[in-house]
Length: 134
View 1 (cartoon, rainbow, N blue to C red):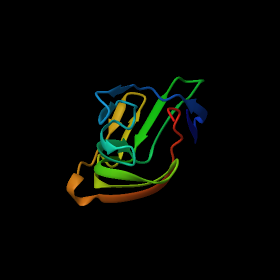
View 2: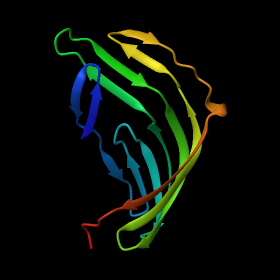
View 3: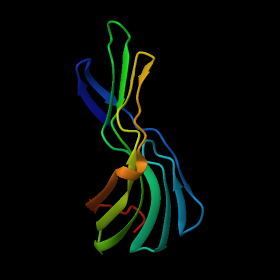
């Protein structure tokens, strides 16, 4: 579930997607807006290749029906994670970003500035991943 508070008002947005487990090592995540291909050679670490929005919002004006979408970034990168202990994971991703400044308001499209090579990013996370299979 996502939450957005904008000039149009406050909106709750459900996430949609699916996950396909090809075998015990490979999976494809089609959870939007974060599609990924994941390879896990063991239960304690994994590598991934994927994309994600970085800084996006949308809203619907309930009186006029105007829809606003702002995609201030789209990142494509390679990452990995390792289990620290139990459900605690250290994860890192690095890559490039693009589609900066794409705005769609009630059917009108402004932008984007596509300059993927000049926008590197690095992301480091400490993640809690409970396991229901143990």
